[in-house]
Image: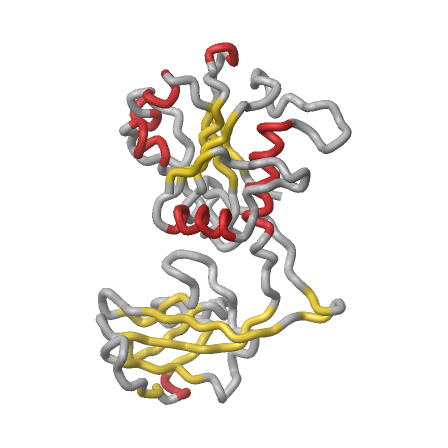
Length: 263
């Protein structure tokens, strides 16, 4: 399952028949700021958050769908709720690599990217784990003694149930490159993100399942949209390039999904 968000014309007859879909970047919404000069909002309702009305005046229906499983636990951020992969019913383990460059001196850092939820370390007490530091991208890695750092502590050094955060009492220096390669467990089926986007857009364009009557996607909407456009900036732009590259722009009935993309 996944979170989704739609902004549609109150009078469907005044719509232009085009669905404009933004690939959500880290669970947020940025399309209204880009096209409508709106202030940023995860749940746009006020005049300032909706902007100057450019997209609405032209009759677009706007859509978002959660596709990332690891966005921070904020009710206004969009996510996909995907299952964990298993191997014959047994847990899957594999290597992960986390790199962090502090902007200021800190006592801990997350193994996830920026604010994203990290894959936790499977065996936090493993003596073979190595945390390294180097001064430059191509610099020599130096191993930090294992007894100098640990998991399960917050920024103040207090015990915390978090195997996705590294703590070191001596602190991490700004500008240094810290790296940890570790074993994680329970990989999420992240490919369901682009598959969900494909099926979501296909449903809004073509209606229900094959062999069924075309459904009205949501109350007051046209029976179907004549075309769909995809939009993405930064990570969301890379999503669209990958989406096209791996063939997700064709649904299971071999129909085109996005008719155009702005990357």
